[in-house]
Amino acid sequence: MSGAQTDGTTEDAVGGNCAEGSGNCSEALRDLERYLDGELPESDLGSIRDHLAACYPCADRATFEEQLRAIVRERCVERTPPDLHAAIRERLDVMSGDPGPSA
Amino acid sequence: MTSGTGSEVADASDTTERIEVDPAREVDGTLLRTELTDAQRRDLFEQQVMPEVDRLYGAAMRYTHDPTEAQDVVQETVAKAFQSFHQFQQGTNLRAWLYRILHTTYISMYRKKQRRPQEALQESIDDFSFYDEARTGDSAEYEVLETITDEQVKEALADLPEAFRMAVYLADVEGFAYKEIAEIMDTPIGTVMSRLHRGRKALQKALRDYAEDNGLIDSPGGQA
Ligand SMILES: [Zn+2]
Image 1 (cartoon, each protein chain N blue to C red):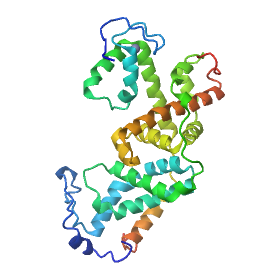
Image 2 (cartoon, chains in turn yellow, red):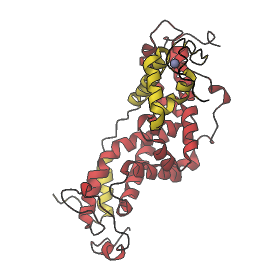
Image 3 (spheres, rainbow over the protein chains, first blue to last red):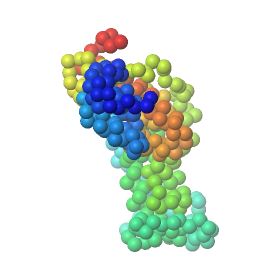
């Protein structure tokens, strides 16, 4: 588990074909989800950034994951029913004992 | 809270619970304290909470899958938020506070009639990789993703067990941090992380199947 970062040639099976790159592919892939979530501790950021900069397979995987998240985000948009805001304001008016918008 | 909302009533009773205001958070130079008048509180609420309604509705749709129910949940959420707005600590995380209310509101309104019991996700998803499968076809990986439609994403999310669906939604669509999701769902961070991990895998698997339906990815079998 302790990172053998400097052996130059990593033959990690995890990435499929990570033949070269700086650092350890399995370590990078283990951290990738938290990295993309912005949840990786400061102290671990350097090594995954270095790895992604040097290892094409891992970088490509990271890009795919990011694109996938973007797709989910973009495809999930809902159109708010037009009356919802008005209905909420009406309810707030009642709750605040306001007879309604005075202006 | 339903009646007798005279503007002076709140002031006397709330003196022990003064809202500390970060000077940077002053709105139009007004100090935000419990001695806000009802009208001021309403204005502030309007400014801070109403802009979130559309996003709350989006989230409520992922909770309920039904526009009428989603509207009910949002209305109820905003009403509850308004009722307890004086307790909201200005300068703290308003969105997480609102989503927490949304979450509990949904649970109290609809969890009982949920169509499905809480399921776990099957074991087989752990070594699934959409990325690896997307690379087996002729199309570029991004092309494969691009074919996935709005409806397919929504369906794929809807098919996830609720706890997984909400974790994934709150992280990937709403951009909440693990800690915020833990607060919203009232669950330990470790649970959030494992729900996210497994929920994303399951989501990817479902999306992969849609990509196959869309004809842009080979049928399974090539990959071990
Ligand atoms: Zn690598």
